Image 1 (cartoon, helix red, strand yellow):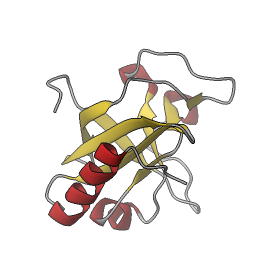
Image 2 (cartoon, helix red, strand yellow; image 1 turned 45 degrees about the vertical axis):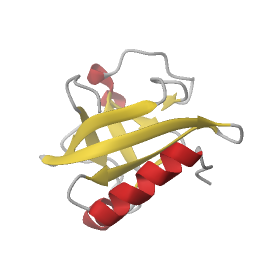
Image 3 (spheres, one colour; image 1 turned 180 degrees about the vertical axis):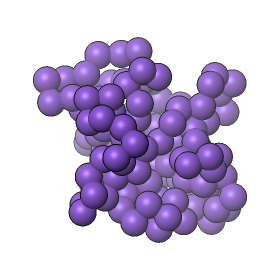
Image 4 (tube, helix red, strand yellow; image 1 turned 60 degrees about the horizontal axis):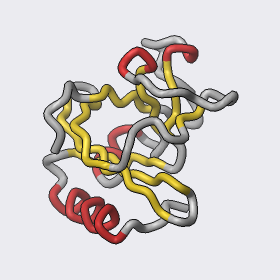
Length: 122
């Protein structure tokens, strides 16, 4: 696990879109990365964004992170709950990832396994 400052995970839903706490231009999506397990249930949907101010790399013209940061295991927070963002490279979609609550042991093991296998997230 990295020792850098945790990323902030902003939940999205089909009905509400981005959290009303943030402006859409302050957020970016992580392509092929999803909330999983209890965290997905808490959010009501698997899509999430990251705060642009916490990120350093380029985005494509649609505002979607493609190669935002390298493959790795990152600390993050979702509504003050500690989470882990597993991000990996594969041959199908380039980057994939799952974000899980640290307390959701079943989902954590699943995400860790997918990270180790370099599975596709489609």
